[in-house]
Length: 427
Image (cartoon, rainbow, N blue to C red):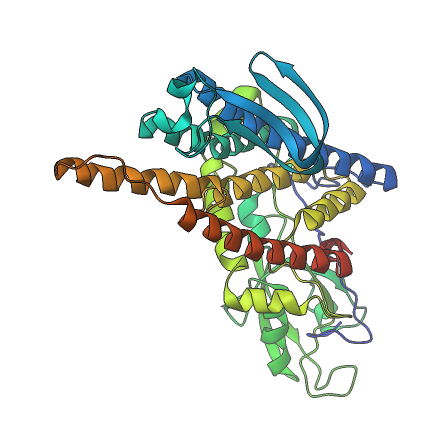
């Protein structure tokens, strides 16, 4: 290959995979997978997702019970009831549509009917701080789940350096016989650091650096076995297509990141609080990814991927269908560690989005409690009764509008992930 893809192009990606000691290691965090692995990985993905939903609702349920509120129902799913059972004062069950879950607490607002004798246990009668704890507990559990999964991954699986993964160094993937690269002494797995003193950070930059130098001698800085060296390559006047373009005669790949080996449980817990795979770092990366995914330019590009024949890119939102496709693709690659890291990010995403200050999200209810508490605090100072509340006539239409918008967005995401699977990125 010359400085750009052509008839002689040979690309080799991932040719310099090394462990922390610098020695080559095979396979990353797993071996090759098969169709059975895909099914197993998807099953693991679904099982953890269902468990996350149940734990989310358990967060609301347990804190409500802790404060003495009456939790009347605890269900997984929505729609018609498939199964239920009463235990004490609470009905537990499963509904037909597995799209979430809910806990019903008596007296969520002053207009809800409450059984005689239970008025003192109605949700709206409790202090604002206790109501806020109950409302936020569900989202909080997703960060707890993410933390536990991070500890599990760090303790059980070799995983790549995150910094190296985000900025992979270009490497020589192949050297064409009789080419300028061979005469200059370049070898497979050499890391390409610079051309004519200009640093190289991606295969595209290698292309851009070489193309303008047809017929010239260029200085290439490279690293081999941890040592940095320089060589001079004399490029031919034309490339194999007869064009006036620099032709070095290499296949360009990217270096696989260094691998972090599994650690003991104590070290894994400590690293879950610090470093590139800590909960804080993963949350910051997730927030950054959400901001980028929902930017106007990204959304415009994402919607265009629904067109027939459009190339799927890593940009834009991914639905649960797409996340399941990623899980299956990781199964095909035998990558179990990254599967759990995918679940880490999914839980963080759910935890963040669920706290959006809009009904019917938990964050919408939190915002309502905060607004009412603030207004009633002012009313107390003014000598008025602290009994102001946001009217259901305001909250209900807003909740319906948000549901319609979210429904349209989710259906669009499902459609794109079905007609143009995100798993195509692995092919």
